[in-house]
Image (cartoon, rainbow, N blue to C red; front, side, top):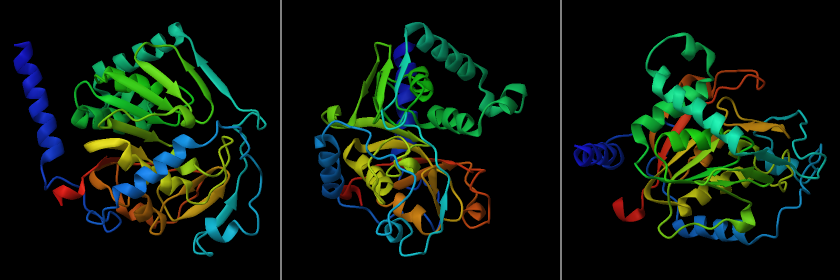
Length: 311
């Protein structure tokens, strides 16, 4: 019976991942504009060969030379809201000992057991929309025994959710120092990051890439760091592997150094080369609807890494 259950689970995953017609369609998702894997792997090589992170990126302003790059020659508005999550440029170190990690893991188990994302109820009303989307997406698409990589973390919540949905291992990549005490979780900084042979089964970037290159966490200032990070995952995730990604969606804006919001200009660039398998919470109208950047709308994209040989 156990063997049959496992075969059924594998069959469901195959149906989800291999069905050629299964995708979400939008004019902002360029499903057939696939990037060259070589470009992604070159970015990965640069990412992992850089010197250990020294938290030199945090500052409160962009230079006159940087502004046209960040705004794409003035086509994207620039706002300012300064947040220092680099501890004054000294770097942070988040520590979750075994007992604390176990408590978070137990909460994730309880939430999965409740299946809160399937029905309206008290629990559903008290959880963040991102949690609804990620639990729903993992139930639908998470392959069994997955090797998972998480980009960007200050608390092991999504790491625990991945474990609850059957991840075999979780690697966390973060500029700053992390200590997450669990035998199935490894934390690394970019210069120590290595991709296993064949690649990871699943990658998670939850409210992470929109911060890349803004220096808020002490990371190096770079106008296209977010786009490079998303493209790099094509060399991190195995062929047909998945990425769970969310970023703020709405009219394009750079709020330095808080975050970016992705609209008609930047969103297609961020998703370049990815097959959009699903988009939980997606409302296409909100890509262009005027909105306060302080109130974020963040659907969850489920992306599939489709190799050129399958096109």
